[in-house]
Length: 352
Image (tube, rainbow, N blue to C red; front, side, top):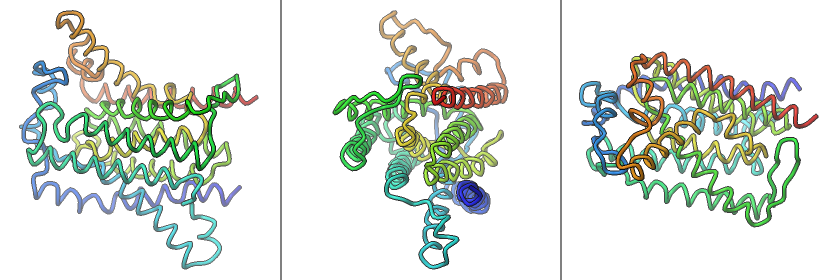
């Protein structure tokens, strides 16, 4: 028991420390080369003007670099491979602490790396002005194509390598869906990625994702998936290091390199714990962010341009309504923690 607790939480501390130490070097580079958006995106996804959103982001005056998500995935990956390396060259202790394993973390690490790199390319195009006016980087469909490809690889891995064909429904039990597991996996990953629009206010995404990954880390630990639990908390360590510098006023933004890595990885983690049905509860802030954007687009399209919200996603609606950005962020943090705890309660009660 003690070694399992150490295995889960020691890497999280290392990840946090590496993130804190490495961030000054990263920010020096980001500011030296002025790696921020030179102007806010003025056109919404549906082609209409986004003047309110443009004024809220105010990229022209703030000049805050993107690519801050590098802190999260770089500190997490460095920690993962550090513990793996020490297990190869040192004694039994580090062999027990190594949490890179085929059945629990190979796919999550692969997903994080792919998402991080594609997101980094998108961010680079954004700050160098080689971007699509609507998307602010790689086009929307190019990013979706990457997510779809990774989702198909993940679905294939689960279906053929891990031989998973069922999902666990709380209070009901396992529900075997056969080959339908593959399209279900793909749809979930696409849906989680759509929740990435939550990255829009200083400190918002970092706090929300910290609560979500902490919840799934605890779930994995309770399921005796110790390697996966360690993986979740090593991400939390990276997120907290990022959040240290992203709390208002932000030194940098998470942007697509962080969002793609986190959302795609989260979908895989949810399936590995077999608690994917709890994902809409635990990750409720992502759900309402994605849903508000979708509803806004549908309303404008089918109601002659009429809006439901002043601006979408809904956290910007609150901001446009007069709420200080810090109030929006902190209330989202509170909601995130409550939703994470609620998800844990449902999981525990369903196993009685």
